[in-house]
Image 1 (tube, rainbow, N blue to C red):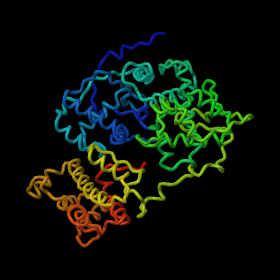
Image 2 (image 1 turned 180 degrees about the horizontal axis):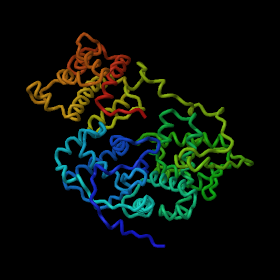
Image 3 (image 1 turned 60 degrees about the vertical axis):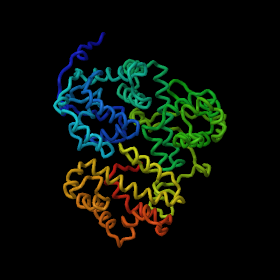
Image 4 (image 1 turned 90 degrees about the vertical axis):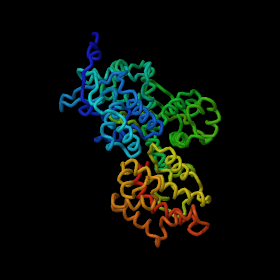
Length: 495
């Protein structure tokens, strides 16, 4: 039976405000919940590249107007009668934030506040959309638009795999229906499902990873395409004792040995770009033999056959509930894989880095983002550079907050001079009563010249020759003192 696609050709004007973003959009992290516009936007801009593209799309709309080159596809939920966006969630999110920039996450609020003033908002009140008769019709378009064979810009591999997993659950593993809906052949489908099971093994090695590593490995942002490429290698399957049979994965080696090597692999896949030990798709392609030689050896086992299975289809949907029969013992795990909690270093006055790796700053200010990352890597033995950087970071954070909250005009009116002529102390004085109780208290202490954790001390790092207040514990203490203020002024999150 041929499907009727007439609905896709018909365009109907709809108010942007009445279109609801789709919480099950595969571009979003399924582990989180999305109720408010800010939460959707925050997830769509969490990576630096995504943030740049998101703001770039907004700038394009402001400059050229909204051009619906690709259809915006919506459907009506029969239960609540609301219209949800099946295709075009990112574009609708941008339009909504241009209309209501105050709902933007801190990291992009400054940009959207400025862009919103540059566009005639009446031009984006309504847009033309295609209304799918049912969600199943919208589902068909989503799959065609983002399928592996699509000629248009499509989902990332992880997003494609998550969509297939959702279809697998919905259609109870019916391969034929899933293939038709997802636009993939049987081999691609089996490969996707196997890779999801392999990623699910992260749960089995949680005790071998740090808290940060486990969170990153469990995240939908884990580089799953690299994992897929690694385990598709014939040598890996031979050396590690793996056998693929359709969607099934059999581990023929000793399980504890396999998991030790798997944990080491995951750790190296999570290393930052530029680290020579990092394993990614390129290094797997160019030097797989060298990688295998440096990973722990996997011991063979003649009589063991352990199949990686899915406890339930719901577990597959979450990408992390696949389990092994006979869970592995970790009694003999190597010392280098022993878990260290990030909490052990929090507020430690003797830590070697000012900012811990578990913190991320989301901002559209390039200099602020770079300085934050540099303070994660600069050893505190370079105390003069670190001390001066704290003062600079405070200055940039305060300025960013002023711009984000559109406080330039009232501040200039109060002091009767241009913003660039208003000193940091006066800016802090102005903000003091506009912040929460904790941040207001920090600001008051900063402005008190008698306090050892004062703005005077920070200014001295740049303008004076004194060498006191430059020891490692004091610098860490000063940063920890300021950190709650930075968390209110900026969008800083713990991962």
